Each structure stands twice: as structure tokens, then as C-alpha cells.
Image (cartoon, rainbow, N blue to C red):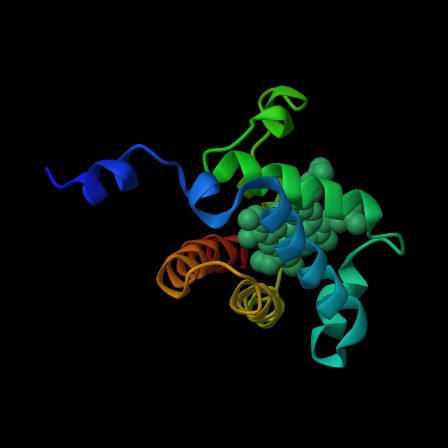
Length: 132
Ligand code: HEM
């Protein structure tokens, strides 16, 4: 196997995108967009006024989801992100707002184009499955 292939297989997506700093930058941009751009008004309205706890929580979730530190799950035994959102009665149009803001946040980050697109596609699939 080529050396480059071995390097790819031995690194998690979390490491490949640049770890905690880049995850945090994506999450912060995502919530900045949600706060500042009116096209995400419905999505913003679902959230509590203070988004600071969400910035920490989504960054923690994504870190684990990407193969990084799993503190988010360790602190929430049995947590299921799909079930938690199933109770929110999310409209398809609101899921589209989530996907649009996340796609922009990833695209504006330093994540490699192809990896960013795969990450956005996978998150988009989750978001669509959360909508009713
Ligand atoms: C489908 C569109 C989505 C909508 C409308 C939505 C909406 C929400 C809302 C309203 C909350 C509670 C916020 C608050 O208490 O202020 C929340 C929490 C959360 N969401 Fe979403 N969400 C969506 C998709 C996603 C996706 C795809 C993920 C994961 C990749 C995600 C991860 C989280 C996390 C980690 C929390 C915090 C849970 C906690 O700390 O208990 N959400 N979401």
C-alpha cells in the first residue's frame, strides 16, 4: 500500500480537518450566520436566546462524530441526537436552513474541499432525517 494511503487510513477525519480549533471555527461561523443572516430566521427562532451553550455542545458533538475526543457522549450517557431532534417537530424548510448555514460554514473554513463536501453531505443527510 502506498505511504499516502496508509497515512489517510491512520488518521481520523477529526485529525484531517485540523482538530479542535477547526471544529470550533466551523461551529462559531455556523452560529454567527444563524444570528446574522435573516434567511436562517426560522432556525434561529427555534433556539434559546443565548447560543453560547450550543456553540460548546455542537463543537463537542462534532468532535466525537469526526472521531475525536468523546467527552460529549461521556457526559450524556445514552444520548441520541436523532431522538432529541425528533421531539422538535422540525420542518423540512428549517432543516434546509441548517444545511445551508453548515455548508457555508464548512466551505469558508480551511477544511480541504473534498473532505468538506463529504462532511457536509453526511451532516445534510442527518439533518434531512431529523425533519418530519
Ligand atoms: C435539521 C435541522 C436542525 C434543527 C432545526 C436543529 C435545532 C436544534 C435546537 C432548537 C436545539 C436546542 C437548542 C437550544 O436549546 O437552544 C438543538 C440542539 C442541538 N443540536 Fe440541532 N438542529 C438541527 C440539526 C442538527 C444536526 C444535523 C446536528 C448534528 C450534526 C445537531 C446537533 C445538535 C446538538 C449537539 C444540540 C445540543 C444538544 C444538547 O446539548 O443537549 N442539530 N438543535
